[in-house]
Length: 213
Image (cartoon, rainbow, N blue to C red):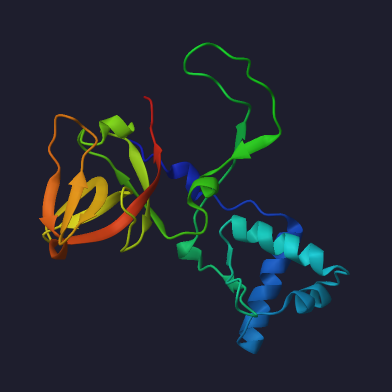
């Protein structure tokens, strides 16, 4: 039986004690007042002297997918619902760079990568790829693609498209007049030409994950 590739990301989000205090304060403030607090109110409520410290904590929580903000709206700090959070789990140390051609020296670096670095705070889902139509983009059968949920795309983006309300496909998206060209990345396959009214964009690809067994 095949094990789910994503079980590691279901672990609880790692946050510091102070970040937990900020989250608890935000939640309690919203419950009591019906709106989110300002940075000054957070600093005062937690006994912090610097608003800059609050900003640092808020930015870190936003990067971890626990908060959402609109930059042009006051009192715009929103808690991301539990079910909508992207689970990053443990970060993976990034120890350097490696060439796929000639050998290069790998170096120890105080860096790490996580799923959050790929998806950010966007509404994202994953799909397992079946078939070889995108092989020249190095997207192979059995790979997993991370897809941002959206109904629009720019020309040339790799999208998940619903065709004629029945068939879902992964292709590059090219509007051409009243038609849409869904272009495979495989010279052995022809593009799919469909009237624009018969194509619904369901998402655009952010990244690819491959598992070696």
